Each structure stands twice: as structure tokens, then as C-alpha cells.
Image (tube, rainbow, N blue to C red; front, side, top):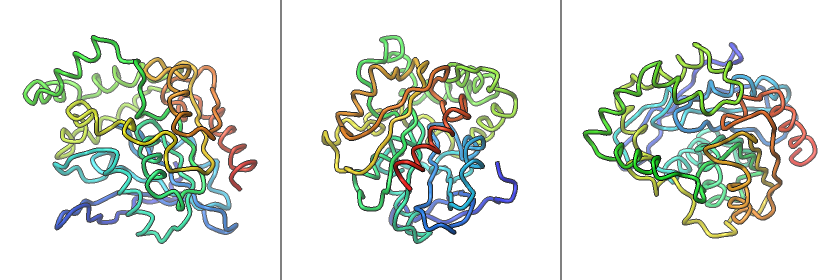
Length: 291
């Protein structure tokens, strides 16, 4: 990622007398008056996961990327993690930076968080680009997976599983199924994903989706949702966890106006797995639909 962009932080008051230090970076400049881009990472990731994407879009446009509370370099308090919390973080960040219109590019849980935010604050969002978003799952989880998440939800077993997972081997085994081009899962990427797991409080955020799965779904939002402006679904054809043929119709019930694109030879981490194809498509969306 652009070495000229250093880590920045803001203190977010997410509750009465409760603050968290949030890490973010800025890129580019607002020379052309176009709405800035905000990149929001997925579960377990961090802003560096966009390192193959952001440099292609920072010429003449202001870009922001931040770590969601509980992930990356942001603080990890013992709080109820949920999409609603992440949506409020987006709102707080835009207010902090005095941004009144934004294009959100979100991956997986970051895409779900961006959609949740757009539903609550539609006038602020100039466009949504959702890369393999989570939040709507149809019937994609098999019985073994459900049993596994049930075990993780048990406090003692969950803590044991977290300890077993929070190391390079566990991270590697978790990342590999999310990539079609598994050569991308190299030591550098594994280290990026492993480092935040060692932070104080990491267990609270990383175990939240299994302990409170309903907090990470979009099922309770109306269909269609409150966001009516331009939206785009970008999917990796080889995503076995969230297969596009099952999940895209779920999202189009919520966003009936959304365009849908499927990129071949890409799995769940599409933006990093097939970054050249993803960047080309995002550039076309920005120039033809959102500029």
C-alpha cells in the first residue's frame, strides 16, 4: 500500500463514557470534487487487505480505509460487536472527517456493514460497491458447520478454539479456502492476519459472529431496504461459502436496483484474490455509473 500514507487514529465515543481508538489511512486528494471512496474490510481483516486495490484509485480522488472496531489496528474492547455497531462507526468516521457524500466499497462483513449504514443513512451514500458481502446466507451452512459454530459459542470451548486458531497455522488454514489463487496466501498475508489476533481483547471481536450470529445478519432489514441509490454486487464465481447463484438473489431482493457482476477464477476474497479484474471492474463502475 502507498508508503506515503501513515496510520492515523481517531477516538470514537461508541457509548456513554466509552471510547475506542480507531485506525485509518488516507490516500489521494479531493482535486476533482468527486465523492471520496471509503474501503471497509471484512471479518478478521484489516485495511492492508486493500493494498492491491487502493493505489489504482488514488489519482485525483480522496480515499479512506479504516479498521473496524475490534479488528486490525483498532482498539478491541469487550463490547457487543454487530453490524449496527460497525454502521455507527462509519457514521462517526464520516462526521469526524466532515464527509457528507461517500462511495462505500465493502468486502464481506464490511459490505454488510456498508449496506446497513446505507439503509440507515441513504442520503450520505453516493454509491455502494459490495464485494462478496455477508449478512444474507440463504441455506448455505451445512449441519457440520452449524454444529462447529455452536461449539465456538460455548465460552470455554470458544476460548480454547480461539487460542488454537490465533497463530499462523490456524490463520493459513482459514484463509486458504477463501482464495482461488492460493499463492496469494503467502507469509506476508498470513502475518498481516495473525498480528491483530495477539492484541488485548481480540477474542471478543473474533468470537462475536459465532456467539451472536443474528447480530451479523441483514435478515431483519426490510426488502427492499431504505437505500435506493446506485448499488453493485461483485462476486467471485468460486466462493463456496457464499455461492453467487444462491446469495445474489437474496441481496437483489433487498437491493432490486443493484447490478451484479461475477468474476471468474476468484473466491470469497475477490478484491485481493483477483485484484486486476476487480480493479478494472471497479474503475468501470466509478467512471460509467458513479462519477
